[in-house]
Length: 542
Image 1 (tube, rainbow, N blue to C red):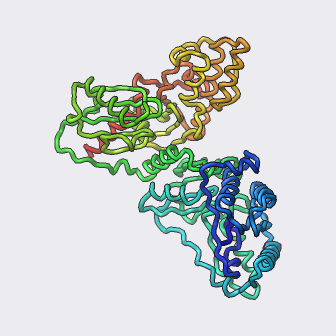
Image 2 (image 1 turned 90 degrees about the horizontal axis):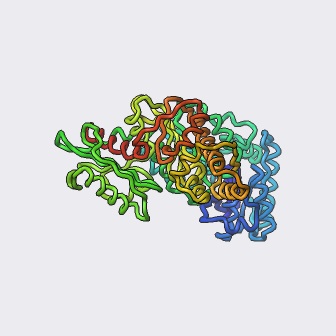
Image 3 (image 1 turned 60 degrees about the vertical axis):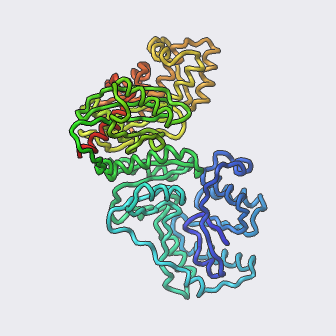
């Protein structure tokens, strides 16, 4: 078995030796081996390749010279002695079919010498498969850097019945058959180089599709710069639904990725508007439950969209148990029992693990609907929760037009502020008030929760006033949040939801950054649960 790393590898040519080629599709649990033998800032895919080769004891590998990370992989593997056959195939980035043809011949000779097997042209020609046709109807484009089969399966499961075009750098290999067998290497080199270009090539004009998709999922790899540039250009087109996902190829942050994909599906396909629950009576009650990382919020609402009860309780170790506790408190407040509830709609990270559960909707869609209920003039929803931040642009009916979420770390979230409050030995309520009493402008340079805590401890040691430190933290959160607003092209009227909306210092700093007032409702923290209940009512009345 010969393994390879990218679509420019000569898979058909290697079939001329009677060998099967398989693309490396790593999905390691960690980078224990890679971090011990390579620089830790090597891109996630490169480290995953090293990890995969070591774990699977791979013996034959072809690497193409597509970027610096692949060069570093070659250096590491060459020194490791793990492989019996390692070939580094130079890749011309500006054309150079004749140069590449010669390099393919060199590889052919090297493998023949290594294996003792002569090259059989007929076997190579028989290995060509017809290129995949682009779909003629609606489809989702999965593009950017290497995504892998695991992420692609998640995308396919999120959009059942809709074709997924895997247009990532390793997923869109499409080969025409060699027309001139007498000049196999020259013809083959031209075909390889004229595939849809990866972003590492000089000419990338052929990366566009024949007709636009209904939505694009753009994947980037941690520490890879190449694909970030294309994403920056694509997001300028506000009419095209676009979702960015960044991974390091490990299974980390699977919950956030699922939430992003589900919310994108709700936005692109409007599948929430197809939900219907049959209840044959004019008067009914709906419970909306928002199971978040910090708090679990419950709203009980009647068919007239009147809130009968609301509760907010800290989320414990079990999402189901906490949700039922919060629901019981709300039912007691409304003088109702669970038998009086006709429909339960759940949202938040724990939404699919809560019982009783009639339907689950992502917090993106629910916050949009809830924000519109709290302020019908709102165009941009800013939600800073316990473990993530999100900004949602909505239309005049509270539907999601576009959204963006923070990276997978806790930077700029409620958890970030909670950790700094603990370092300052004050409560979050005290933090909110003290942040308005600052005198000296202090800058917190790091948004990493751990590094920022170290800065806070150092500032305390330097006798910097607590209100000044808090103001520095508030500015840091506001700056990161304002960046998200810019990315989604947010505009007034702004509404802020989530627990951090109660922090007046953060709100003030964010208003200064945005140059506009932000509406804060007394029900800001329950916005997701409100939206869930509203969507349940719509499903009954539809």
